[in-house]
Image (tube, rainbow, N blue to C red; front, side):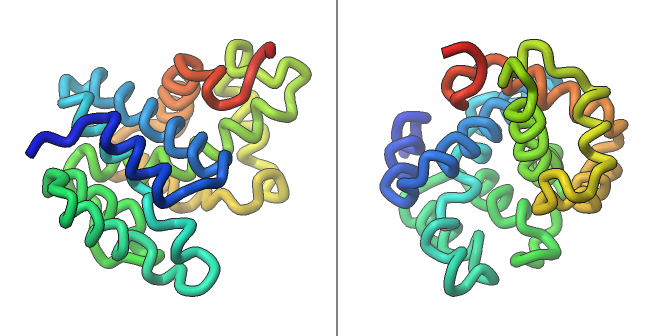
Length: 192
């Protein structure tokens, strides 16, 4: 069975109703596609992993956050998703709610960009333009240093991810900004 992007989007909406969660999924999907393209990897496969990575979040976050990624993996397996996507979903929670270590480039990238999309989005939202079009790496790094800003973003996790990927933090931030710019309107950013 071949899983399409439309299948993944419908499944995600079945499990998630919060607009913020859906926008986060779109942001991570865009980042995964961007980095797959830069690496010559399968953009559709990487995009699927990004889109469904938090499939189970709304079902488990309040009562049993330690089960995050576990329910998603079971649902995705039942629906016939590729093993690489399922493993990437599990690995993005490594050290938090999963013991599946990110090993492939797709897994390492998902692990790294997941949290960073939140920081980039929040940084854009506090700008006068509320846009990614004029957001710079320097602006994001300035907010990065303020631990009270977007306090829920695990900066150490992102640093571990960049080390696993073998890239500089500035390069990861730049890639996330570039990727998210392509879907700025879908994220509720920019001019109305």
